[in-house]
Length: 437
Image 1 (spheres, rainbow, N blue to C red):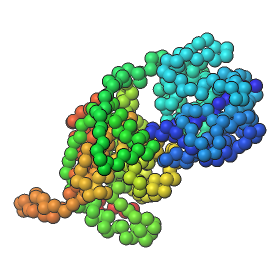
Image 2 (cartoon, rainbow, N blue to C red):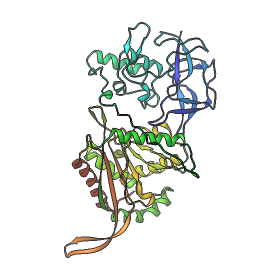
Image 3 (tube, rainbow, N blue to C red):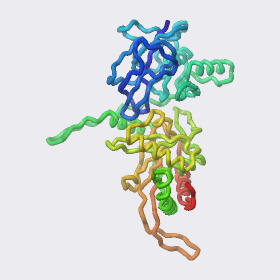
Image 4 (tube, rainbow, N blue to C red):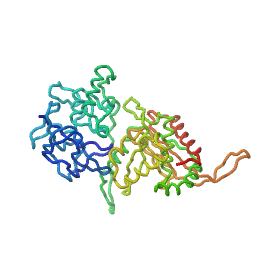
């Protein structure tokens, strides 16, 4: 018999804990692989945790309503078969493995020599079962290599079959062997920052940040430390876009029961430009550049409580404009209702934020790590501009908007950033006013 640990999975880049809302299984229940065990909730999303193995639920370690840190063991499953993971102590004893493994920690797996763990699994956005993690550790597999394995389980989860098949292909030469050096560690040490003292005065009110606001603050500071930010700006004449929207919005609302806003139009244009400049649809991993195959655009969404969340529209370039409109409306509604699923806030490769929603002309947005660029959309306002015509220059009233692009100067230079934002401008300025939706 072996006992497997069910841990609180990481639910997003900035989520550090979750609340157990309901146990779907009780101690003694028999489990099939992928059976939902427990419902959990965070400030951002609600989800279920599936069982990674077949077996019997022998112990639940937390009660409904408890707040549990990411990576903490919450339940034990007893399973028959090979003991591929360290056995836990008896119920009530200290449970080995409940502490998160530090980089380069040493662990022992029965039947294996000591191996060096090159990555902390808490850094991953994916959920890995204890069995998969155990196999990865035994094989001395870096996290960045494990992340490349395509999962065939529920929600793309990597199963035992997936990792064993990958290892077999790797040993036979059908998969390139990866280095045991975790490139993520190269150049990652940041200098310690001393915070200045803050004094309070009579009448000041001190209010502790909410958990979500703390996570947003930490993520913003981290992004500024990691990436040298550069921001470029460009004026865009969106008169054709405004005319088109005014023409179709009433009939679209009547036909679809939904509004067509400017946001999906800008997201559609951003995706088209990314196809032409894929170097902007990328991430940096140490001294490696990862060029993303998919174009998944996050849209920064303000919540009623003043916080921010970034739902992600997947494969934007493969959707029709109608599809983008419906995706934007659906995700925005879910965000405001706190009903987004974990998958709907993960996997972004590029982000857009709309300053114009609050009448701001422009801004210098902070890059949403680990992406390398973020597009800022300013308010649309009427302005007198000079137009060149065959009869000479004329002054006309046009709808003008400022686009800003903040980019990571480690891999995106001014020329590339300028060409990308200019392409977005060209797409919007040449918008087809007779376009069907």
